[in-house]
Length: 303
Image 1 (cartoon, rainbow, N blue to C red):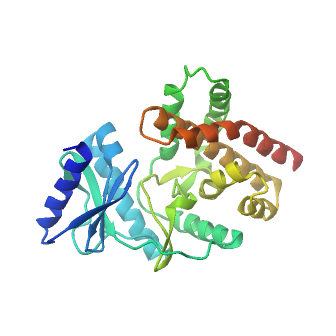
Image 2 (cartoon, rainbow, N blue to C red; image 1 turned 180 degrees about the horizontal axis):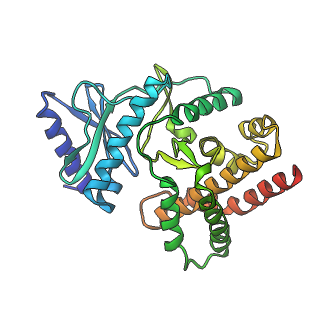
């Protein structure tokens, strides 16, 4: 039996001990987290396989417990979110050395794509609701993984990687200069973490909530859309056209540059370690340098 199948069996056994019966586990995703629908119940088990293997028990528990609390906070603020289940204890719980939480299962449903204005409004509402989150959030928490990836990629022979590492050093230094300017953020509010459901669009995946620079969530949402679609990508253009002063444009430019650096270095590091999509990471690397240069020109042209 493979490690994944063994974990699935343990999850089912644990769920049965709560009173659930005749469970059919359906794997929905097996990336950084193993996500399992415990059919026929409207419950999803989210097993933090990477965090559980790389970090100590206390760290993994804290991350998952905070994620549950942030989701409930956002619900209280009227933000549409995927919620922890109420049918069994949502956790966190340790199952065979892997920490996991349990969430409401909401079937994916085709929805009309969000217009640029609708998408920006959803991100902005999320960011505003995060500002008064009472949970203790890590300073630059989601960014620290980028620092780890930068160290691992330091000896990489590809000059594009080295050029991106130079940008990383510049961004990292600036990001740490004024911690008073940081604010609570979702941390990873990209488009794939906004899921279409029978209840409408729902935010999910609050594992990376952190104190981050202004516009971080907006940059996270539009970063890869603009990287692959160019600076004429509709949502990116909408954001830029509705920023009415050079200070905010510079802040947004900084955030999206940092986000592209984080995504590209992180995905490349993850893929080279055998955990991610190397083709996708390689394509990001091909595009990142020129995209960041265009962002610099855009900001310089508006100063």
